[in-house]
Image 1 (cartoon, rainbow, N blue to C red):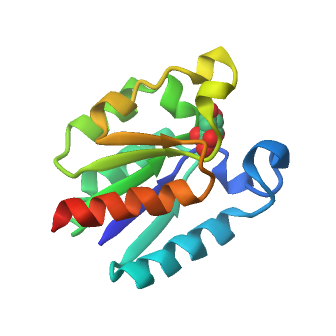
Image 2: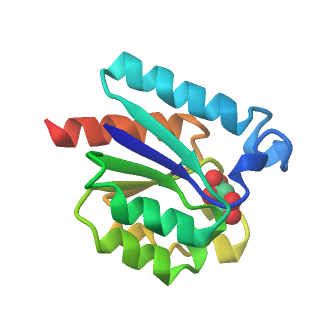
Image 3: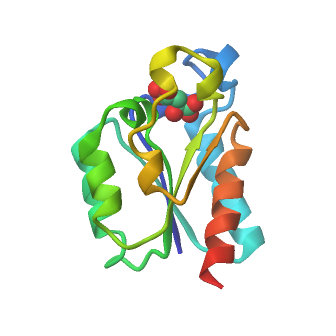
Amino acid sequence: MLLILNGPNLNRLGLREPGVYGSQTLEDLERQCEAWGAELGEAVTCRQSNYEGQLLEWIQEAQEQGFSGIVINPGALTHYSYALRDAISGQPLPVVEVHISNVDAREEFRHRSVTAAVCKGKISGLGFLGYRLGMEYLIEAEA
Ligand code: DQA
């Protein structure tokens, strides 16, 4: 069972900078991840929060809730949240970091991720497909 987490402002997908993030909504993304989960034979739970503390609590509780891995798009928290980094490194599940846009092709402040080093890996710039690739990795890693 995989946990798909989206952080701050990702509830604005479809409305927010469509030239960068596309015209599909968070609901489209979550339905797509569930469909991919069904295709890959893995249950998927999708959650989004604009609150750092809420994301930390979901990560802290993920193992005891029975999840086997986490795909996370931390939004801008990626670039500065040591609390998020510590929450990821302080729990045992494998985590894949995903960004819809190519953060390395954007502003300088987006080039730095404080969370990627405590994740298994980072996928950036591949749109929603990055979530599927993260899910596939986690399913493969489980086997
Ligand atoms: C993002 C990239 C971040 O820099 C930005 O703050 C986001 C979205 C992405 O998915 O491309 O909110 O994580």
